[in-house]
Every structure is written in C-alpha cells, then in structure tokens.
Length: 252
Image 1: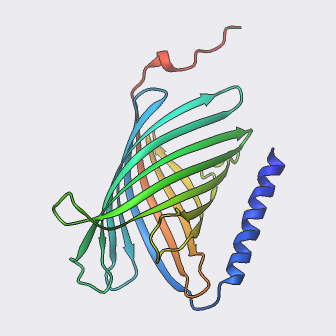
Image 2 (image 1 turned 135 degrees about the vertical axis):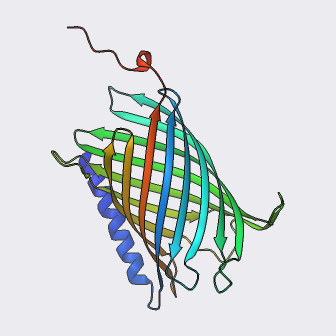
Image 3 (image 1 turned 60 degrees about the vertical axis):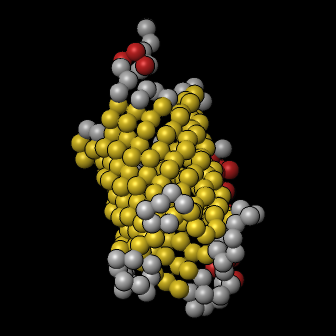
C-alpha cells in the first residue's frame, strides 16, 4: 500500500511538471496572506460543527482581498481495526471580495455551498487523506437576497500525505489538489492545481496554530495566474461527549 501511495505522489508531481513545461512565459504572479480563526465543536463521536472567520490580503493597490465567514457540519465513521475513517459533510460560506482597480471600499458579496467526502487511512506513522469536494459560488446584490451573474461550479480533488515524526511536534503535511470546472461552468475560468506544505503546532489543551504555504497555478497556455499563499490559522477545539462514547480499556 505504501509503495502505491508513493507511486501516486510521484506521478502527480511528474504531471504537474509536464503542465508547467507546456505553459509559456508571462505568468501573472501574485502573493497573498491568509489569517483565520476557527472553532470546532464535537457534539459526539460522530458529529461536529465548525465556524471560521478569515481575512485575505494581496500585495496590490487594494491590500484587502476578501473577508469570509464559514459554517460546516461533518459526520465521521471510524474503523479502528482497519485504521481508516470516512467523513462527509457540507458547508456554507459568505464573503466580501474587493474589486481590483476600484476604491478599497468597493466590495462584492458572494455565497458558496460545498459538499465533501474524505477518506483517511493510517499506517504506523504515515497518514493518507483523500477528499472529493463539489462547490458552487454565486454573487449577491448588496443588502438583498437576490443573486446576479453566473454560478461557478468546481470539483476539487485533494490528496494529503502526513508523517508523524518521532519526538517532533511539527509534523509535515503535503497536499496536492486539482480544481476542475463542471461541464456547465461559465467560460473565462480555468482549471488549476494547488500544492501545499504545512504543519500544526499545539499551543495548549484544545488550542492549535496551523501554518501552511500554498502554490497555485492555472492550466493555461498563456498568461496563467500563479499565486503564492501563506496561511496562519488559530483553531480552538471543544469536545462535548462524555466518557461513555470513548473506547473502554480492554480487560486483561
């Protein structure tokens, strides 16, 4: 199994390298900083709710790129004997996005829904995670419930690889994600991929800091958008379920 995962990762990297070679010069390169705070509440050993606030900045004339709020509901099913976990869930996101080349006070409103399934598998110190997500986004008229413009729909396929290093608190996590337009997606948008490398630091009980660098590039032969992103996220976790939900120690 490990050999298959390593081979899969190698093929993904080769594919990205071939794409980069096919794309001509003149990429549109930009940088972003993401700052976020989130709260995760475990209702029981299967259901959890999460809330997130995030601000994104760009190195442009309008530094503020967007402000978003997200709510998410997730269900988990674990198989401890086989060391795997299957999750599914849905989320709603509302955000304000600045319009480039316009005054900084000019903001557009957007809503986004997404649905996802994930598969986690652990083997010794190695962890593999596969996520499939479908999302659709639409712009809203200010101060109304009406929408304007076309609906943007994407499929997102992400593979993540993590390794638990012995006596080390900053375990690395590598991610490769592909953004694929749905068949009825409007024109003017392109498929893209994103590579991420990050880690998580436990500050104290229930308090965590997550650091991540991301590289994103469009599948486009001329003038592709290339984005370098640095993300810092604070997460607070709260567990509600009692001891009766926890696994009891085996009797000897």
